[in-house]
Each structure stands twice: as C-alpha cells, then as structure tokens.
Amino acid sequence: MLDKESQMEYARSMRAEVRMALATYPHILPEVVDYMLQKEELYAIKRRLLSKADSNISSSTLALLAKKEKDEEILKDIAHHLNTDAEVLEYLAMFNMRRLNLAVASNPNTKQSRLDIYANSNNELVRHAVFLNPNTREETRKRLHEEFRESFWGVESWYDLRGIKTVASGN
Image: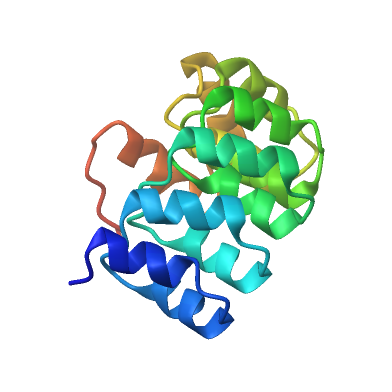
C-alpha cells in the first residue's frame, strides 16, 4: 500500500497517466483526493475521482469544485456525492439543468423545501427521485405515491422505504 508521501508525489506528477492510475488506486487517501480535485485540470481524472463509490471527498472540496466547474457531468457527480452539503445542492439546483436536477433530487442531503419544488417538476424522473429520497416530507411522498402507485418501480420503492418486505405475486 502506498503511503501518503508517495501518493502526493504521484498526484503532483506531470504525467496524466500517472495521475489517472492514482485516481483508480483503491487505497487513495481522502486528503490526496481532495488535493487532486482542487488541482486537476483533466476531465477524465476528475470524473474518476468523483465516481469512486467509497470516496471520502470533503464537503469543502466539493463546494469549491462546484463553484469553479462549468461541466454538467462533473456538476452532476458533485450533486450525487453523499458528502455534498445542502447549501451546495441548492447552488447546483439554480443551474436548472435536467440531469443535474435529477441528481439533486436524488441526494438525501437535499433540503425538504427543494424536494417540495421538485415534486411539482414536469420531469417524471425528477418526481420519482423525490419520491425515493428519504428526506422527502411524508405528505409529499403520499401525494407522489398516488402517481407512482401503478408504476413498476414505484410500489416496491414505497414499501421498501417503510421496511415492509414485498414479494411479487406473479399475477
């Protein structure tokens, strides 16, 4: 396993392939990820760092990155990240981009007031993301349940959120 000094040395490398290899390294340290996200210019490396499911990117790094980024895919990755705080999600919601709205609606850190707004979206996928979001107000979820009651994905999700195990009847 690489120690912190070695990881930082690779993070500062002028060679993109070295930095990409580090971005895919399963034991990359959170402080190295933070450093790389703040310094990295290459799109593919930033996307790789943001897409790591086990990443511990700090909320402050995600906030800084959200303010300086213009690319919708990277902004969407930030919106999906569980360490993104509610204020940054509100900032990202102001862009009013369809896929970015979907990512914000999916994040459990999104404020209930924003989820209430998204619950009235003309985009069915955004409304469904609100329905599934654990931070959605109960009355909003009940209203959306009526809409998604007959959908293949809605009923199972509604019961799963309540801890009720369902079994397909086969009918």
